[in-house]
Image 1 (cartoon, rainbow, N blue to C red):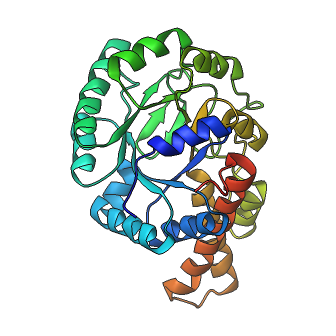
Image 2 (cartoon, rainbow, N blue to C red):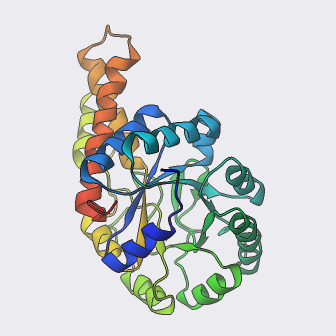
Image 3 (cartoon, one colour):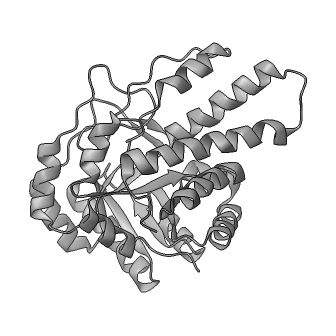
Length: 309
């Protein structure tokens, strides 16, 4: 089975009231852990590469690892560029065999966002690739994304129909109260389900995406702190809110910080208990299993896409 686009995944997810997990990948062990979980529960996958991951691991290596995951698992897997900020970056990923790209021109004016997105969509569709865009701005910091709380803004539902019709984009990331990064909320996190509901009404059947939707389990924070860390308690989006969003118009939920925390917590614990060990396989192996465990939890309890491959 070759890499696939997210088109059929999203059609089934919208109709079935669940979401597909879009998991950020940076190395072999993370990819293996994600795919192990999805294979165990028979779930489709979106494996996404950020600009930071491209710089760290080289997109050619990551693509080959994802292709190996397809061959090994037999699962439908989409390879996606996360937060591409220029036409040139999106084009490079399309040319290198990605099956989906995100053009994030949300920092530009509404008119320029349309113009930039439309250019990417035209090139991508000519090459059989699907495109995600963003309308509204999420606060927070993650890889190349850095938006202050003052500069963030909710998506205006009144703009979504014009944006989608003029760009012909395939899915749309909106801002309803999520935030990039693991530690993000000063008060209780709240999602604007009224905005999501109105967007769904204006774009019936159209797949919506949630970024900044990690919800790091407290046990990972406590494990990191128990072995030399100094991290505040995680205040991510409650998982029941994400499950509700998945039952509505949201067809794709991005998950990154949870995976990083699982890897970091496991490696910190390992070296605390085995300070003289030096074989990377001895600590990356358990880290891979930690990724598997948290991805399996997300698929079953949050996304609801188990047994949907």
